[in-house]
Image (tube, rainbow, N blue to C red; front, side):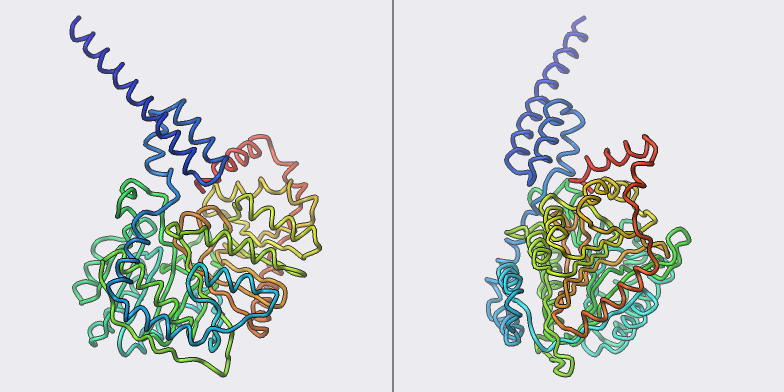
Amino acid sequence: MLVDISILTFFSAATVVVHALGIAHAAHAVMTVRSSRGAIAWSISLVTFPWLALPLYWILGRTKFHGYAEALRSVFSEHQKLVRQAYSEITKFQVAVPERLKSLELLAATFTGISFTSGNAAELLIDGQQTYPAMLSAIASAKNYILLQSYIVDDDESGHEFQAALIAKAQQGIRVYFLYDEIGSNKLPRTYINSLRQNFIQVSAFHTTKGRGNRFQLNFRNHRKILVVDGEIAFTGGLNIGNDYVGKNRRLSPWRDTHLKLQGPTVQSLQSSFLQDWYWANRKVIDVNWQVQPNWEANQTALILPTGPADKHKACQLFFVNAINQAQTRLWIATPYFVPDDSTLTALKLAAMRGVDVRIILPNRPDHLFVYLCSFSYYNEMKPINIKFYRYKHGFMHQKIILIDNDLAGVGTVNLDNRSFFLNFEVMSFMINAQFVKSVEKMLKTDLAAAVTVDFAEYDRKPLWFKLAVRISRLLTPLL
């Protein structure tokens, strides 16, 4: 009987403690969760079902990444001369933008310290068939160093091709630094990494669970894809490293994606983003080339915008909302995941209401079911205001593109969803150049020709179970 009473006492005490923790964490959620909807959902769950909600909150509840900004302040303080040199080299090329895009210039300067620069050249690379050969060719041409960062690296034919290319350069005495996200690349075997290290390549995970308050968090990812060679040429965009991205996944093939090859000050800006991530992961500063080699023949005006959950401001959301608000005649967006927050959704609706041609290209095939289902939940909201949705049918579309009027085009890693806006480390390239904008327009027109216009009434004809799944997915938007 004593044993039974002691067990009962233990469970009673445990219940009190867990519920007290639930209430305390609910208060924390009310004070810190970025959206009122998310705060309400978390607080109710934590008070009502603390046994389940507490571990979920520890893993998924935070939107602020601790320690990153502090680490950068530390390195900036220790290496002031180097930092000043790096920034001064890039800022020499800062240039004014057209008056109606001035707010974007000011936001960029606020978020990154560097705004739009001149002397850039950006080349569109469409799909893996163009992107991988261009990247491998650049790697083969390296004379001093290679910086490579990818969210996903797969241990397959494409992964081995990049592995072999990096090892070949390392054996020639070229310094090689390879950064990957341990969550995105969770299937990457230790043998792959060891092979690189045995050949004198510096390899590191980004370590999203490193630092105070991040230990149990699985929400944060480094979603950036960057390649910099000798500080002279750079690549960024939607493609990771793996067979999927060259269309070798039967279910999702052919794979539709877009990358950029860059020259000019944008190279040093991308390099700076890589070095900051590398320092977070390793607390080491890499010796690189900060001398900008402008391409005056192309002379494109461009901006590199790295964003993430360590930002002082919600830079990704604020910049995109502001960019959408600048649209006067055209706003075309291609994104594999459409789960916008309320501010972005409102900006899209207002653009359509003022007569802007708003087109959103989505995949017709899902690679993440909940995100795919969630996109249907916006159909009824879009129908009355003439926002056009298209479903790309020629394989899976993974590109992240925004095209505004005849003035501005963006290519990068940002999806139109909560995860990219608030939880992931991302990077976008924005170009103000008529020729480049026309090339993006031509590319998207080809994509639209391979897509079908969404009939919003189609959702009304869906069975009840499908609509229920869609609504449940919409409730999960803070986590998607």
